[in-house]
Length: 267
Image (cartoon, rainbow, N blue to C red; front, side, top):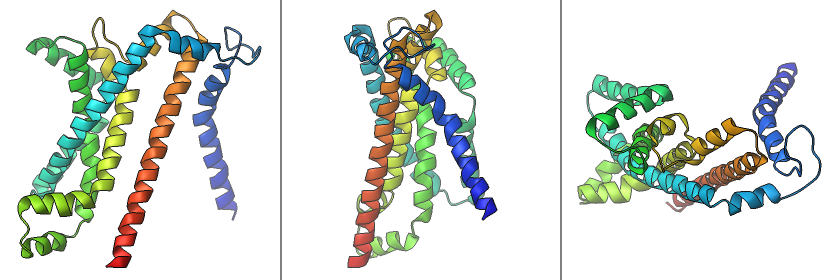
């Protein structure tokens, strides 16, 4: 009992440390003053400034477009990458491929960003929308692979053999057996890629060019010029969007789980 209480206290402290700065930032986004030294009164003026800032709205749209495109493309590539790894028969080769995929996830963002900067400079790709999109796709694909691969490993090979015995073609096996089974992993990979793209700063900072920016880079640039509560308002909106994505993923995952359970009961 004592261990359980200590565990609960520890979890509470962890969540307080993680979320206290966020809620502190959100709280002062409603401050009528111009600093975070004292709360002078409630106002929505900082949010009005965010929505009246044309440059900021364009940057937000750029960030959203990059995130959606990179998440969609990396999900497609990641699914086929996970399928390719799962079909490798030699265990050592398969483990090597999985390790190489995981190395890309744990590699420092600074090294990845610098590598992309050197690559784009050598091959002549202009820094801007294209360079940011390509780099986001590159670091998102391993995330999708690591989300989809466990679902493929869980799937029994008897499902595929049964489908082929019934005369299913390779496309039928893929579209009607494999993809429906790994759908939760595909959604998880898509939402993870989406949130990583929305939040990324280090890699984007290296590969963005003049005339193009994302919200993370813009917030950093404005914060260096001085503390403005408009940044608080913008950061609050980003946090709420990310929270909505997490809730959306959770609801889709729950619905998928219920539909699978219902299918099992019917069978």
